[in-house]
Image (cartoon, rainbow, N blue to C red; front, side, top):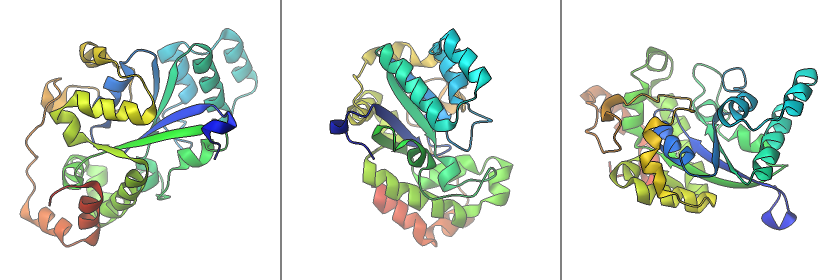
Length: 261
């Protein structure tokens, strides 16, 4: 992997699992001046979330010549990210990629988990990477995730926690910010994320994030009515709690990410 001293361009990556508050965090980050944030980008997810389409439709980054060239000779994933990064650099903008980490650590129902970031694997040869993760208490994540039938029927606590544990290990290695800390003090949490990704913190996000909708994921207000605030935990039945407490992955995630049981 190139280093800053090598002169390789910098790419910022924010790793987030599904149903961990990543969308609202990214709406805040993308609302800051000079930030170009591409959402849920992954080498295996191009049919759903195309980085070139986002770069063009959301930010107007691609030139007519770029579009003509892409139509005649489609770019592979690495080349697409290189082109977008070049256009951001030319305009003095900071490119952030929100990783679709679900594909790597859970996978259901799209693919099998690799238990490492395939996005990082794909782009590491070309960039100096600045990486950070945001996380959420695993039980709260599961309660939100299992509200969708496909996960409730085909994932299950054991498989979920296996992926959550591997993601927690990765997050601990690169640095992470907890969703619960973000809801208590969004400025402090975002300043931490910006510091890790070397982005100038822009407090003006407070006036812009609620209207920002160039984002994948759940951009509706949800339970919070469009406010950043801590919410009561969804009710978990005793059977679910007991199932989690019986699995070693649960305690591993709690200890790794600094949560009380």
